[in-house]
Amino acid sequence: MAAMALTLRRTRHPARIELTPLLDVIFLLLTMFMFNQLVAHQAELLNFRLPQLSTGQLAEDVDLLAVSIDADGQVYINREPTDEAELSGRLSEAMNQPTPPSVYLQVEAGQGSIDRAPMVIRITQIMRSAGVESFSFVGSPDE
Image (cartoon, rainbow, N blue to C red; front, side, top):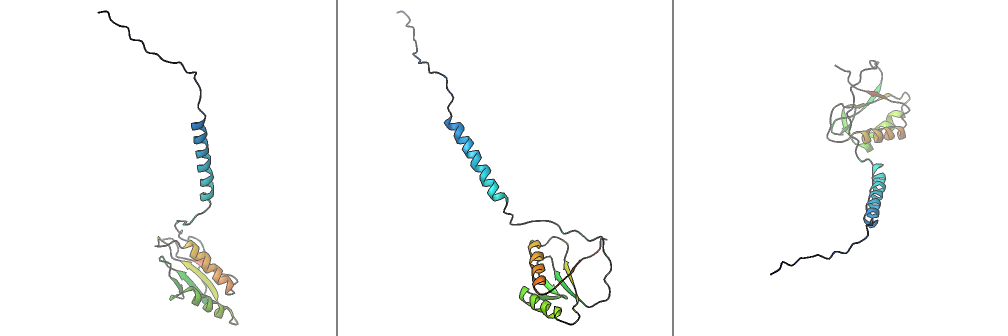
């Protein structure tokens, strides 16, 4: 028997570049960039360390009102625990005295269980609405 020559028929297609997958990738990237721009402006939590104070001067012996925020977010007035409503009332009462006291705001250094930066802003707004014209930040000096 004679060996049969096996030939395969192949049709030649012209070479071409498919644009559909390329366009899909471009639109996917465009969508991702647009979405990231929308999300990038919304910061829910700012985690930072409060620095130790290294400048300033010793406080004079004056009538004062100390507002403190501890590491866990508890607010104190002259070392007495309080909430925001009571804080506003006591500050308003103190500012209506003939000689209003000096107001100091102290944020305890160190890592806490919550982000205290929004609390500092909120307490500052409460102080302003209660009539506190000026206040000072105080803290512990560096060791």
